[in-house]
Length: 158
Image 1 (cartoon, rainbow, N blue to C red):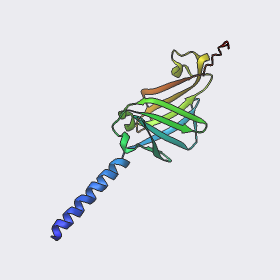
Image 2 (cartoon, one colour):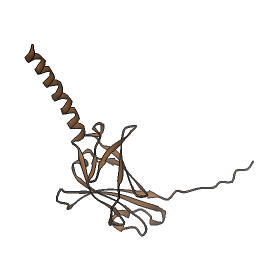
Image 3 (cartoon, rainbow, N blue to C red):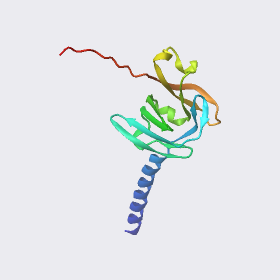
């Protein structure tokens, strides 16, 4: 009886800690925050969009923890620091296994991020560069070009 009870307690504890550890194991290191290619010191917030849910990611001084509901999934990422809210609509699950450099580019825009976008119609550019554990940058990056809002005024006869 005692051995059965001990085994059940062990199994319950093991399952609980395995689930808890899985939820906390995916830590994404943020190597740098940048504005116009220059590193800045700032605290940040991260939200993960999974389907129609927006989840707050726990952050620490070196990065953030991917919520358990997002592990292994391609998701959207909202990254906020200083006065900037950066949006990355499609972040592949494998990108969470790399270190990140997150930044924003403002006018005049760096051609490496602008691509074929018209600079006159661009408000800002957000980028997420992937880094190796040694800090060297990989070729892969995600770039989001935010256009200026356009307002069209149409006169409607009454």
